[in-house]
Length: 260
Ligand SMILES: NC(=O)c1ccc[n+]([C@@H]2O[C@H](COP(=O)([O-])OP(=O)(O)OC[C@H]3O[C@@H](n4cnc5c(N)ncnc54)[C@H](OP(=O)(O)O)[C@@H]3O)[C@@H](O)[C@H]2O)c1
Image 1 (tube, rainbow, N blue to C red):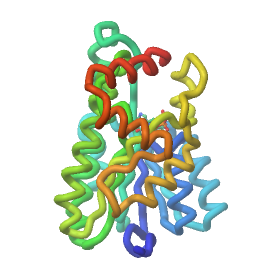
Image 2: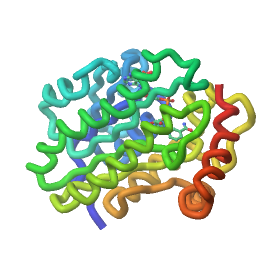
Image 3: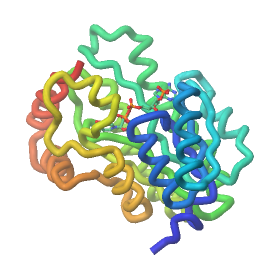
């Protein structure tokens, strides 16, 4: 088994770390002794969370307030880094819920910018450093919604498919150079983002954020894709392998129509 700190330390960068799953990733990494660079837009949240992590885990934590929807923000930030970053977690995401025809184009473009252009740029700009080290990792946060199209979140789902397929290709390409890449295709996670968007009750198989972070980090290096949670694994298998595509789209759309 790999020593996590040697392979992925001494620094990890978590994009979208001010709350929810990103904060859970940060905590799991701090518990493994990694120093952290936390990125999100809301500086006060980042700074308060960083202080908490320093106090609880005795690791160094730096913060960067950054809007990843801004063109070239991700690549400029990576180029400015002086720390030896061995692990990148691309977790930040944006979703505008609603019928495609009702969502203004700038919002659809923001989904693309945060969910696809930003992880692409962060990963591309960090990889030469990881290759030079000959070890390291990249986590791309994806979703079970990326396995098929879905009403009400068509653009978001498409961006998640992008992350899964990108991770699969990089798993092969970068794995040959000692870099572990994984897509985490999560089902529902109890985060502020999910709870704000959910009209009805919680989805079956919903997980806490720390469970998703832990299962994802445990799988890093062993597979191109992980689906956290036993029920979600079964759902993923059914949706992607057993059901005809039309049935999978209808079934997923029944759930996503509950979002607001
Ligand atoms: N929750 C679920 O049920 C679920 C299911 C499957 C997959 N996922 C995936 O898991 C990841 C985390 O989800 P979550 O529910 O924890 O999300 P969330 O609660 O909405 O948090 C999203 C994080 O991204 C940051 N962020 C959003 N837009 C940003 C921008 N333009 N620039 C920089 N940072 C930005 C937010 O911080 P600021 O607002 O401070 O910028 C926040 O830290 C996402 O990739 C999501 O697609 C979630």
